[in-house]
Image (cartoon, rainbow, N blue to C red; front, side, top):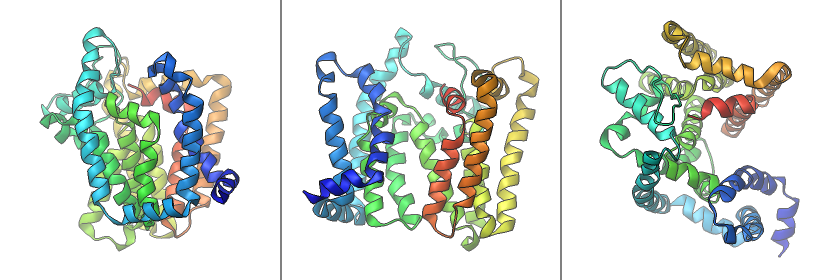
Length: 350
């Protein structure tokens, strides 16, 4: 059992536990029947040992490498998740007839449909009276799923794409397997899956954008154009996410300065166009008003503290970037985490 002792001493195990299980406690408290909640400590202990085994148990690591080497395991998981969500998601979505459930999926679907129909995507309140926070670029990217009635595939497809992105970013076979297994271990992931939230898919988009821009200097004209389109989609997932999209462009400075200038400028243009597009409707609930609301939520003390934290996180994220894809992924995570948590949470929720 030496792997247990190694796991206890490994900060990575505790980090995985904190980021994957602590957010899931809210899901457990909200959805799990009262008699089963007493089993929560046992579940937490089991997941802690699971993370330790993934990183330190020789046989488990060997199995993960084998799974990461073959694509059939990932394909099987995506198919099973798709079937599961095809059954569960409509039932969860039907709660809106009772003015219950999450409205994140409705916001994205309605924004996407309005754009496809050629209608200006004014932030029309949904059935709960909340305005959509998703923006045009991201809504158009998801349009094939909304038009075909297969929106329930969004999160399963994102999970299937994640290990491919990890491999493209010079990740190991073990890392590819972990990219599939770790999300499945979090109750928060399952909540996002069945409620139709797009937040997990957004995270995968930023991971893919990071991997794509990392290889910018070796790309031809067409792949670079695809990177630009992906940057627009990522930068318009939510109004605040134009910041990490531009930050990833900053990472490119050491490898390709012209490309970095292009992507940073693109992030700036995205914000400028959003402000110009919504300025005539500034008295309504638009990204402009959401930013103002975020500032108000931070308060007189929280605003400077949040600005300092964001600036410090940005500087550190850029400084730690080297010529490895791992440092780029770490920098992207730092950039997303550096944004004021309350602001990010409010604007990210529909």
